[in-house]
Image (cartoon, rainbow, N blue to C red; front, side, top):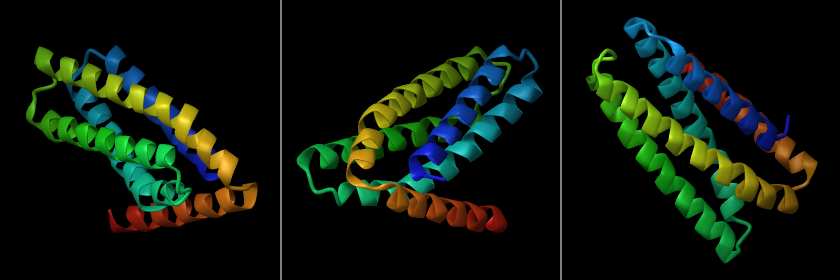
Length: 148
């Protein structure tokens, strides 16, 4: 599967988790959804930062460089919010506020990534190259899950 398709699939999975977390009233379930979201985002970020972004950066244009720099910064901000969430009681109104901010950050990042970075990748890399990156994602994902 192409790297861009795999990343899109992960985006949809995380969006679904956010919606489920938003709908639940149960504090324990909120915590579980938050942990699933955090785990999914950490793996997703690792795949992008170790495989996909370096490949896109090699396009060599100033636009590609700018997009990747911004994507790294967006990942950093998401990491900051993720680090705070486990410290907040899921029954506290701040928990839902932080989850909303996290969801909005991720949504913004996904929109830019899918419309700009993926577009640049599809323009530059052929199907075989995108499939090879997808295979690298799968291998890294399996390795990460084996270590967990």
